[in-house]
Image (cartoon, rainbow, N blue to C red; front, side):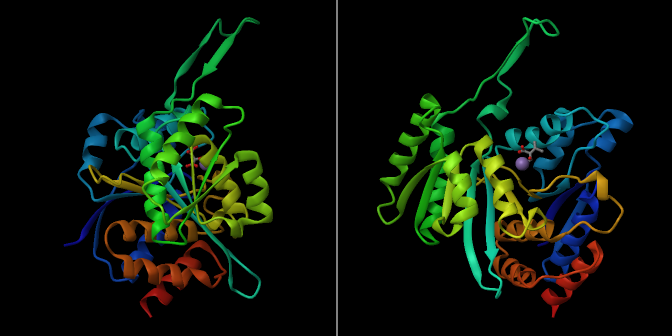
Length: 329
Ligand code: IPM
Ligand code: MN
């Protein structure tokens, strides 16, 4: 049976890169049935719809969601991010944000190969806090970080399960020397999961030190597990040291499969280059490969990844067509 995919092209370059990703999936011979959802900043400006509960319920009926990018400069920060992207992550319980990074050495060999498991439903992203006396010199803003044992434990468990099938090494990244409450909860959750995986080695890095290692010694990593905000920041750096953000893919997973998972490139909508044909669709194509892994189409996903290892140049559609040809051929 064809996999039923909800497609949210979104704003800016989102629809351009998503079109190429679907082209490649079809070239890989995977049967899909797509339904387009017109959501994002442009839609919001037109009629006020961000993501109503009715549309969210429609999305629940699909096998997966493929998203391009959302957000436009005309809409104030936070409206689309919180109302659409974070609403999907939270309401669909997409508690794992999996972001793989492969660095290629000049001769084409693999320089580093690691995966960041970013907790995706907690931390400062939950929107806890508020503002008092706004606009006065006495203004106060608080923005709490919510960390639950369940949230940290399930993120760590996913990381260890993933590492068990890879090079059997997991690094916890946090800031336990300053964020003593949240850091302590994370460290204990990590240790308790580690006890169930005696064959998996462990390490700990403070997030600031991890930034140095990402640049100077990324080979040390296999699987990294970290909280939502550290994971957000670190994965942009991961992209920057692994061929650029144009290659960085991500999977927002509900591993319990109580609803659809969502797949999107790490990059944003890049409104400055929309329509120029210069957006690299590889991140979206590799995100679609992660989607195929999750749909049980691992062989097709591997073929897509193999087709993306040799650099392709040209316009957005040139790159998509060349990768599609390699996958089909
Ligand atoms: C990402 C993005 C989002 C995040 C934004 C757009 C809300 O930066 O997916 O990394 O912070 O999670
Ligand atoms: Mn980000």
